[in-house]
Amino acid sequence: MHPETNSPLIIVAPNGARRMKADHPALPITPAELAQTALECADAGAAMIHMHARTAQGRHSLEIDDNRRTYDAVKNVVGDRLIVQMTTEAIGLYQPKEQMHLINVLKPEAASFGLRELIPSKASIAEASDFFHWVADQGILAQYILYSAEDLLFYKELLDLRVLPHDRHHLLYVLGRYAKGQQSSPTDLDPFLAQSTGLRAKWAVCAFGSQELECLKTAIRQGGDARIGFENNLLTANGEPAKSNASQVAALHEAIVTEGQTPATAAQARSLVLQPISNNEQQQAKLN
Image 1: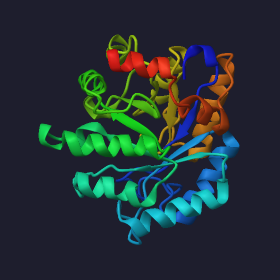
Image 2: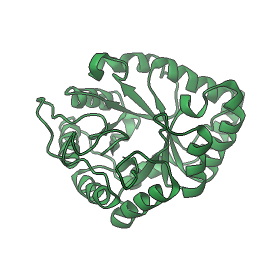
Image 3: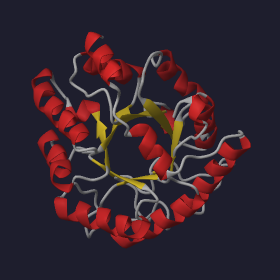
């Protein structure tokens, strides 16, 4: 969110693609577990959930049936209280056509996309562009995942080329992905901020390791949103194992309030992120 909204969006990422119960007994795997986690996190202050569907054996899945069961289970429990986002992350198992097909069929409220995954080469630009503009036309909130300042420059190039639509999307800056041991630091945000001048899109941060909360607080002070949860980090701010995803969300909620801000509701987030750009902005985008 922009600073003037004074309402940072809390996104919970409760499971990810690779972690299992052996990593944390409270990690949600099944649709029922994810639905319960979503409800608890909504109660704790989250307004959006980023989920990875799993197979019956617990493996990461972009299969239609697995994702539909997961999405419907969560939506049936939380209704409009959370923006429900499905992932298209490949983790080496899926190709761009399969990633896009999932969203074409499922048509979730929101979906996340690794730009380098969906656009691995120049030959893939045209198909990806058609897909991303279709996503915007459908009213699906796209979140573009960026792992470095170079990825942010790539995103800006795609905007200039009109490969990406100029509205109905959100950015996620991933801090510490390439750091030793994937331990993030608040200073990892600096290269992203250096390239963010003039960007219209709202953005969020996720981070790894015990400094996760400090990284997210830094993002909030800079006008960003924050993603927290077991996908990226299993530890509290003092380095102890976290009790649950909901407890992590509650800690972030408290930190936002302590900063003198009020976390956004899902309704507020929808109105801010999904509102179409004005005709004047469209014309300016074309000129740029």
